[in-house]
Every structure is written in C-alpha cells, then in structure tokens.
Image 1 (spheres, rainbow, N blue to C red):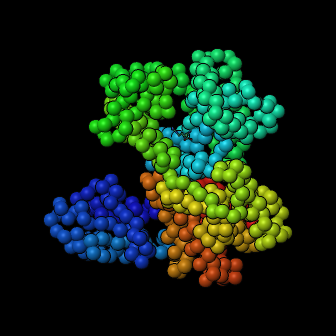
Image 2: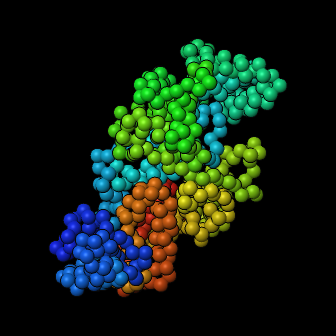
Image 3: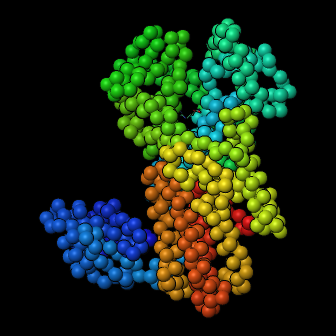
Length: 564
Ligand code: ARG
C-alpha cells in the first residue's frame, strides 16, 4: 500500500496546507472496502480553511488531478475517499508479496529503537501454570510484532527467583526432601514440599521462624542455603526451558529478581536521596497518598526488600542498559496497582522515561470443565494443556486425513497452535473461558481453521503443474479477487495497529479474515481449471495468500504445516 499512500500524499500536498507527515498521520483505512481503500478526513483542515469539512472534501474531489493509481477519488461527507485502481493494486500487492516472501509486511519504522518486553516470568519451584502461559504467548507475539516493524527487541524473563518462600523451601527440603524425586521432577517435588510446609506450619508456627532464619542465611550468602537455592533454580529453569522449546519461545535475558540483589541498597538510597522515603512502623515506604494510591513498600521492618524494590531497580538498570523507546510489562491485570506504583515512583524520582514504561495487562484464563482433568484440583498445568491439545488434534487428524505421514509432528503444531490462538484471538484484557471444542474447531475462528486454509493452498500449488510460472496479476480484478487482495495489502497496517495497541488479537483476527476471504474466493473462482493466463494469475494470488498466512501465523508464534 506504500506506493498508493505516497501518491495520495503527492496529490494532496499540492492542494492542502499540510506537510507530508501531517497528511500521512491523517490517512485512514475505511471500515469497509465499499468506502474506498483510503480515507482522508477533513476535520483538521476545517479550522485553518474556515470551511466545513464536507465542503473541503467536495472541493478536493473536484480539484485533485487524475492519477493512474486511483480509479476514483470521491467526497463522502467530511471524508475524501480514494479507490485504488484494481489492476495496479493487484499487481503491486501480489508482486511484492511473492518477491519479498517472509519479509513481506515488515517495515523499518522502528529502526534504531529498542523495545524491552518483560514477559512470562514464572516463579521458581512452582509449576508453570496457565496464567504464565498468557504472559508467555502475548509477550512472544508482541516481540515478533515489534521486530517486524524494525525495532530491536529485548525479551526479558524476570524470573521469580528470590523471596522469603525460598526460606520455607529450604526448611522443607532439609526435613522431607528426596534427592531422587528432585532429580526426576524437580518442580513437582518442590511444589509438594512447599504445600506440605504450609499445611504443617499451621500447627507448628516455629517452622515459619526457621524459614525466616534460612532466608536470612540465604541473603547472607551462607553456602548451604545458597547451594540449595541455586540447585532449585537451575532445575526449575531447565523445566521451564523445556516448555519454552515446545512453544518455540526464546528470551534474550533471564535476569530474574535475584539478579538485582547487590544493587538494591543503591536503589533504596537513590529513592531516599530524591526525598521520597518515609518510615512507617519501621518499614521504608514511598508515600503515594497524593496520587491516591497505597504506599509503595521498599523495605520491610527486618530490612528485607520487596517485589517493588526489585522492579524499581530493574527498570533503572534496563533503561541504563538499553535506552529503551518503550518498556512493556506483560503481566496479569491483577498487578495493575503494583506497576502504577512503580512507574509513579520512577516519575517522582525524575526519570522522564518512566512515561515510556507500560503495563500490558491481561485477564484470567479459565478452563471449561470436562475434557481437562487437573492433577492438583485447582491448578491447571501448562504441560497437561499442551499434551491434551496435541492428543485431541491427533484424533481429529486421524479422522480427517488418516494417510498423513508425519501425524505426530502435525498434531503438535495444530494442537499447540490452537492453544496459542485460543489465547491470542481474544482481546487480551478480557477473561478467557477456554473450551477445547471451540479452539480445535476447524471451521471456527481458530488456528486450525487458518492452518487448514494454508495447507489447502499448499496442496493446490503442489497439484499445479508448471507452477511457479510467469503471471499477470492485473487480470485479478474480480470482486472476490479484489477482496482478498485488499486484505493482503493491509498486512503492514495491521502490524502497526497491533503494536500501537499492544494487541496481538489484531493479527489473530486478520489471519482469520484472510483465510475466510480466501475460502470465499476459492469457492467462487476456479483456479486450476481456469483459462491458462487466469490460472497462473490466480495461482500467484493464492501463493501470495499462503505467504501472508505464514507470515501472520509466525507473528503469533504458530506453525503453518503444509499438510494436515
Ligand atoms: N513472577 C511474577 C509473577 O508470577 C511476574 C513478574 C513480572 N515482571 C515484573 N517485572 N514484575 O507474578
């Protein structure tokens, strides 16, 4: 769409008192194609020109010279609507996609800018639950979305690897720990110890004192305490990494909470020097009553630092290290207050970049009863979810395509894709009711639906003898063809929109739309059976659809199997 955009700017620049950037910023995409491919709203001009927006739009429609890129330029109320020349739109879109391949959709608008994305961040020695799944898949998609816009992305896994719970864990492990169980399934065993500690401590409060003492030892670098902690951390991390590998997720840094231990005294000192610290019952706090928030806790009575202290420290550290354009924290909505407090303290400390720190919240996920049994009652384990998804996908594939060769691999791609998409297709702030039948429905708004459209195209292309071949995309002027092309041409706009709102759901919706529009087209228009010239043009079109589906699914972290 870039060339069309530039042409509009060229046409308008000579006729309105706005410069290139101002015009570019105003240009909109109309809600439906009947209203054109671009709309230029005239509200802003109304002030300077002292005329009604509608009058300005009408005048411009008269005045603008003809352009070979646009079939029509029409005023509609306060908008000036541009209709792309169908042949040109078809040619430019299909040709750029087939030339640029996996690069199609990418831009350089984020060049030389860094986005720090804090995501996933599970807690050591605790099972990787589905809550962390949300952060993981949303954060990972945002990472790729920003990357596609040319930003340098830094993915940070701010592991929950420090805190008083490690004192409890050490006490529990020394009493009831079992080396063999730890080796076999560390997180499981550690979690059991943790649960057992809590139930026993109810009747034996001295256990809590012991735990506190062991945490103190840990903080003071006691070698036994440190070695145990280190081991718990290492084993947990290995299990998390196994899950990340299944999901295809990577991080640039695993600097978790413990990483900041040595820096926290300085952080507290800096907040003190900014004149923000007061004492409350022996604890150090930043009073935020002027901002109508509860105080931000920096240090407990016993001197221990807190979650917020570590986040303040981490933010300052990250800014120094990365000079980020934006820092995103992909964390559940239940931590909204925490981040508001942290960002406010940073602002009060005088850091102007605090404005560029952003909490990207999301709602809860709940599993509809039935097909998912949970090992521990209320806790749903991510791994069980992924295994279940793969199993169900395999059953479906078995039924639909019994002769498929690499069934296991495809079942994994489809099952995991369904889980990821079942999350990302929702507006992130909403709570999700996860329903197996829905996320695996091949005809619903699901990953399998999109993957299936993709596989179908691959199969058509395999059957097309002599393809790839020369083609003339200007033949693709029919309504169904144009509807597909119009969508394909908007891919970059969608990536920009997804990033602006930090919503991968924009891309999820988009790939479903592309798949649906393709299905409509394919239903109406023969491809392999068409006249040779049209056949080749249509093959080029579906090849372009295939590429955009691959690129779109990639942004979401979902595979696109060629057969299923
Ligand atoms: N470990 C935390 C939790 O599970 C999430 C950490 C999020 N990141 C951060 N910088 N606070 O709730």
